[in-house]
Image (cartoon, rainbow, N blue to C red; front, side, top):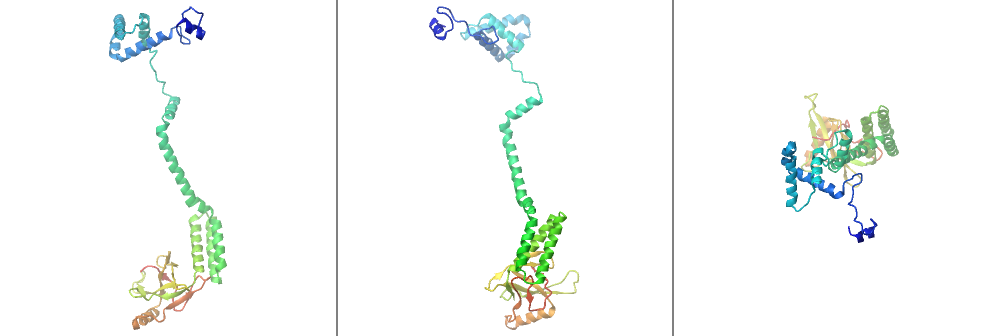
Length: 318
């Protein structure tokens, strides 16, 4: 370092040469340490040579001489004591990285370092789990929690429409069944009672004439052979619900064969053989059924008033 530089930096009095930079806690100048590290690096790159030479103590001097020539060929002047330091450092493993021993701490550290790789998968799995939990809550938990209120609400709306004691008794029976199911932790039973109340509410809101189906290409009646008595026949007249504006409605009907309720536009009402034949004769006469009204259901009633004899049993498929 020049005297001017020393003066500028306050490194020492003018005219004195600055001391070589030192490494904290070491008595060796930085340049020598760097050279020793380079010697070690050179020795590592010639691993086969090192392995052969360091195993033979008598030939260490020959190894040092070869290192001198290597550096001399590169135009680098490396003092002998630096070469000796480099060889000693390699033997002692001073500049060699030694991985930490396997332990829980190191494993956790590696997991954290590699979080970019596994984090995406874990994040995706957590996202799917959260989405599934939300869907489960919205679809099942929340609706189930509202069952008591829903039963009371639908029952109240239906009672307000009911026009006769028969309808009110039916609605109360559905409500009692739902509440009993809730007390017994029978959620499916409570849901079934709620569906019954909702179906009844829909029926109460409707007003229509029951009209026998009488259109070209469509059946007017069907008969079935019951499974329990193959010698008998069950007769059905096909009807539809027509509101005061002439619109055909879809009506919730309980199928007596499947015991399931379906919302349909046409269904069959069970009649006796005499009524079935009378309708058939009416149609065969001129292709038109003059007496095509089968009954009437007013708003607030659950069951129509029938103009023709029927058990009230119905089918929705044939």
